[in-house]
Amino acid sequence: MRTAAMPPRVCTGKVKPRPGLYSRARSSDSVSSAMDTVSSAVDSDQEQLVKSDVLAALLDRVPKVVCCPPELGEHLGDRANADIEHDPKQMMADLERTMAACGIVSTLDEDDEDDEDDLTELQAKITTLLFGTPHAPYRELAPSSRMQLEPKDQISEQIGACTPSQVALQLERAGYTWVKLATLTAVLFSTGVHGYKALRQEDMIVKQAHEELDKIVAQALEEEMTFRELDEKARLPCRIVVSNIAADAEMDDLLDFFHDFVSDILEITFLETRDPVKRTRTAYIDMCTSDAAQQASHAYGYIFGLSVEVELASSGLK
Image (cartoon, rainbow, N blue to C red; front, top):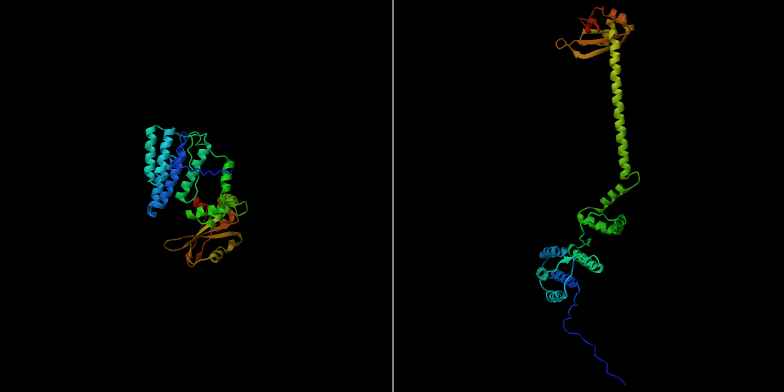
């Protein structure tokens, strides 16, 4: 015996929310619908301003779990269904007034991992909608945990997840060229001869070499000055000073003047200073021995009509 098929049961009317549930899920759905409405309703000039205001209000509330009684859950569910097409700012203001009237306190539920994941995903979607690129979700941390650093393994996993294309896009948006930064990165982290460490070490070696060279040069100059002082003291007894030499006189003229002591002369040095009036010159003549210098100091004669004056260098110091 066949029986007539029963027609499918159709539910009409509103389905009331179950008491005792978190009202945040409905608030999240209403926020998502409100964001879609704002994105399609406002003009392109006012879109960024409205989105920024909504995001500023949501960031303080999205990461927090709101516990409410069954009566408030039903009330918020009805208000969310009725005000989807209203202004999001007005919705947030009504929600705050309702929560304040019921004496509800927002608390962070650390045990509800599923709700926290939903809020994190919702916040990531809102941030992506406003800024165009996914950002790390904001999380409220306890004061004791804010100063704790992330493990190295977690940081390496986050860095490894970034692809070169994503890095290139972010750098291009910031105004940097990928080729220039890639070259700079290759230089900084290269282990070859053209890497940063190798070039820095080469600069240090060159700098140390220059410092050592400067020390050697300074030491050589000091030794040279000491040697010259000692040599001057040794030559002083064997030196004669010849003055009132004609302005055009040369070394050959002095050799002709001291022709009897040519074999005893070691060096002839003309001084750069001249007489300011007659423009005559002065010269030092170093002899081999002090006796030769003593005999040459008694020489007398003329060069180009001027009488030459000769004396011992040691006599001028007495």
